[in-house]
Image (cartoon, rainbow, N blue to C red; front, top):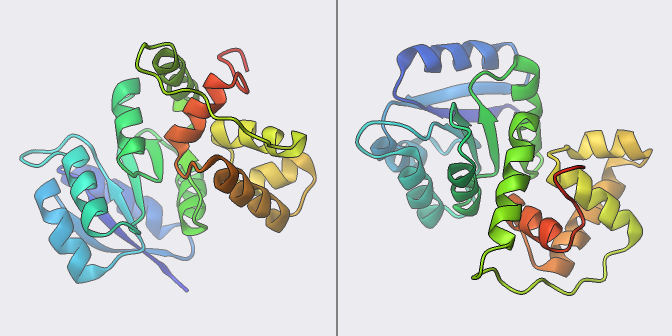
Length: 219
C-alpha cells in the first residue's frame, strides 16, 4: 500500500525538490502541498495523509504552532519536521510538541527514505547530524533546577543497549542488524522500554537516558 504525504513549506522550490526525491522512493507519493502553517489543519482534514512533512519557519502561522494545532486536533497524526534549523531548544520543542522525527533540509534521498520508513513503521527518527545536539540540550535541561526527579527503572541489559541506540537515532532495522536480532524482537523491546518508563516520545527518552547516565555526550 502506498504511503501518502502532505508537504508543508512556504518555498515552492523546496516543495518541488522534496517531491522529486519522494518520486524516486518506491511506496510513497505526495498527495498535497501547503505553503503556510495556517493551511495544515484544513489540508490534513481533506486529504488524510499518512505523514506530514512540515517546515518550521513559515509566514503567518509557523510550523511549531501548526504542529501543536495538528496534534491537538489529530493526536495520531505523524509529523516529520524538515527544517534547516539546528537550534537545540527548537528541536526539543518540536519533539515535545509531538513530532515523530526531525530531518535537516540538506538531507540525502537515502536518509529521507529511512526517516519515512521509520514513521511508517510507527517509529521515531532523528537525523544523525542533530542527535548529538539533542543529547547536549537534554544534558543542559537535566542540570537545571526545575528538572524532574529521575525515574526508577528496571530495564534489562539488552533494553538499555537498545535504548542507547534509539536515543542516537537508529531505526529498528539498523538496531536489529547491529545486534543480530530480528526486527520483531527489537520492536518488542522498544515497546517494553516505553511501557516500563511510561515515556512515549524521543525527547522524553533522551532526557531520561541523560539523567540516568545511560548515555553521555562522549557516546
